[in-house]
Image 1 (cartoon, rainbow, N blue to C red):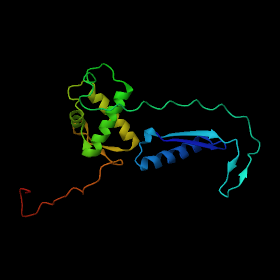
Image 2: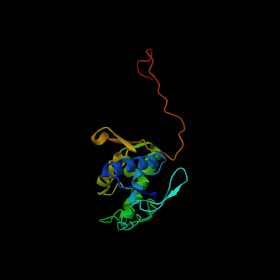
Image 3: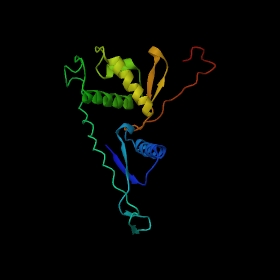
Image 4: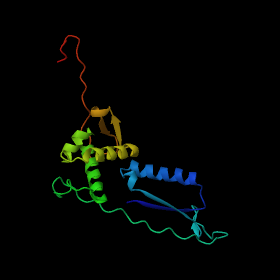
Length: 188
C-alpha cells in the first residue's frame, strides 16, 4: 500500500484535497488501485532542503502538534479460489478479508473478460447458489464504478459492467466490425 507523507506549511482543506487527488490519480494511472493509496499531511517544523541545495532553519518553529496515530494497514487479501473455503458460501457473514479477496477476484475476472453481467460474475466466481451474492456484487460494481475503473451499460437484467481501468493483460487486437452488404438481405 503506497503511503505518502507530505510535510508543509499549513494548507487549507481545499488545498489538501486537490493535492491528494492529484497524487492518488497519478498512482491510479500507474495501475495501483486508488483505494489502496494513503496520503498524510503533516506540518513542517524542522530544517529543510531547497532545490538550490541550501539548508536553512525554519523560522518561528511552533510547538509540534501530536503526531497522528499510525493507521493499521488493511488485512492482507485472503487467497480466493472457488473451493478453498467450503463454508465461505454458507456463512451468514463474511469477514473483511474474504470480501476483499472476492472483490479482487471480481477485478481479475473483469480484466480478463473485459465485460460482465452480474449473472456472469456469479457464475465465474462460483456464487450461483448464494443468496447474498447479487447484493454483494452490486455493491462491488458500484464501488468500482465510483473509482472510475468500470463503466455501467444497460439497465436491469441487461446491465453489463465494462472494464476501462488499467489492465494487467496485454491487448491482442481489437474487435472486427463487419458491415452488411446491400446484396445480402439476410445479413450473412
